[in-house]
Image 1 (cartoon, rainbow, N blue to C red):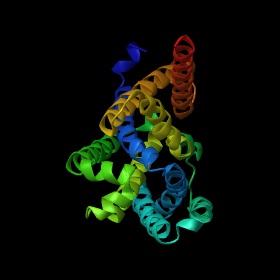
Image 2: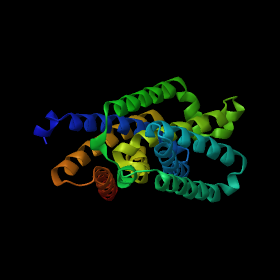
Image 3: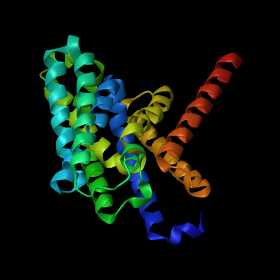
Image 4: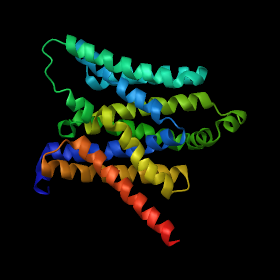
Length: 270
């Protein structure tokens, strides 16, 4: 693997893995504590509609997927805030329709011959410098938002009713979390693909949640764990010529099993 570091595409892959992992760890923490995993899953899968439309109309895939995903996030936010009792049905609808729209537009795109698997399961070795710029900008936006509105995120995450009584705009905070999740999903497509992105946003977070006592600590630890799993997964992917996204998620799953085993042994000894 050391000799591979001389290649630009390997360098890009490593940088992309770290940037996306940090973003996924931070936003994943907000998703988990706000019980939005299913909502984020709906956004992730429906984002394929934006990919298909971008290919058909000939504009950048990142732009198309971002606009489509943010629109879906806003729609989900509005619906869950006004029709909470029907959220499951609506997410299932958005999930299916979004992917169906993407498939239809891909079918209609003249001369389209790019492998569908690269969007579903990631193609991190194809990351470009422009992709890295987008990832870095998103991470900066996330860091700024968390630093600027950390108390608001914390209040809404653990007691939204009390936060509303204190005058915190809970609906705006709730919507902003979904929008940031949508953008994180889009930049993660190149790394793990839209099928596996939720695992990257939740497995490290689940481990971090059991090891930390604050939301801030949870964000930092989950980001570091996600980066570790991504880098180890890339090593296995390169060494054995396997799909990078799948390797990353399997490494994360092994990490979860190890953490669970350690905790179980600790309780037995205690």
